[in-house]
Amino acid sequence: MRITFHGAARTVTGSRHLVETASGGVLLDCGLVQGPRKEAEKRNREFGFDPKSVAAVVLSHAHIDHAGNLPLLMKKGFDGNIFCTPATRDIASAMLRDSANIQVSDARFLNRQKRPSEPEAEPLYTLEDAHAAIARMVAVPYGRTFEVLPGGVTGKFADAGHILGSAVTVLKARRGGSSKTVVFTGDVGRRNFPILRDPQAVEQGDAFITESTYANRDHGGDVAAATEQLLEIVKRTVARGGHLVVPAFALGRAQSLAYVLHQLWSEGRLPRIPLFVDSPLSLDVTAIYKLHPECFDKQTLAYLDDDKPGDPFGFSALTYLRTTDESKTLNAKQGPFLVIAASGMCEGGRVLHHLKHGVMDPRNTILIVGFCAQHTLGRRLADGAPVAKIYGVEYPVKAEVVRLDGMSQHAGRGELIEYAMTQKKASIGFCVHGEEEQVTAMKDAMLAGGFSKVEAPKLGESFDV
Image (cartoon, rainbow, N blue to C red; front, side, top):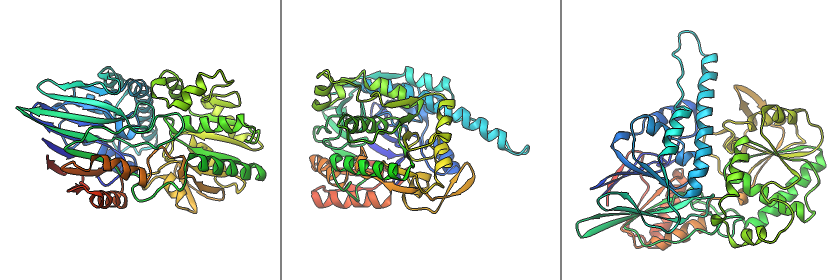
């Protein structure tokens, strides 16, 4: 068995790991690279392998940096099955269609701006390609062994606790009388996080591939502490008469924030200001959340079964905005309000318009609640950049910028290491989905914890297991 790392290698986005077995190649995830446009465009168009040589894909979850390049894989000749959990299939259907529309829209915008001598921009993929990928998805529930490839390659999913449907994958390849097992975490969630179950341990693997997003730091408190911080930030902004802009991923973060806001509102602790979620995709994904109670933790199930008033994902005080015209009305709205808007890294979507209109007002607050990769606007804002470049125009940052890692759905350092230690008998560990500092921290921690060999692979690097 050979594993080659074609993405998320010493960086956070573009998860793609090819496992070559005697029965064929299995691709773990097929995500989009996010970051500087030209570099991301090049990396996304060049897989580093022939898509026709891949026999199957096993998908950990539906976030775009893990699933977003499946349509291009189809477009370039892949014709196998894409295995995932039922919730991931439903969410990926919405995410990939939305991503395809963005690809087409971005290409159209670039072509309007280009010089006559420049070539036409082509979308990475289209809605037709997204539909082709969705049609190839095979949904398998947690805990059920399934055949990935004829001839001895099987898989099994366990709950990763990161977002709805996220999975730790156990991939087993048999040859003759022996077998090799690869355990791939995808993204590991947090314990005691609202809505979802805690990450589940799985059987011991021969190779262990782990994410490293927050391997160099913990979140500085649990969700309860982060909720109190959120409340204080809201009160502070309201006292100034400002707007609170929260960039958040349409999948996962928007739903967990809605849940927390609902709790605070129900307790009478949240100021009675207008609350908005400005994302059509969030509205679609939230509807899908309601279809998958098998992913909920005991507290959420008990709440839903208790006939309490209000939908925790869409309570009466929370308004979802679908149309562009509805979104634009917020730009002229007076008085305090809170808006959750995509995207989480501030690299596109409606949040850019809210930042454009609000970043120069010192009464306002920009609240960063999740990880932002290097070279993204979200990261620059979180790091204290004095200027925000939005649609090519530079705006001085006068608004208060607050970073609240306690709302992250990624495991912090302690939880990541604790999960990794359940696999310390593996013959080799791999640290991916982290920047240089993070993968190095994760590698050192795993070696100190008892792993015999750990690698932080470079892009395109291969290892025999």
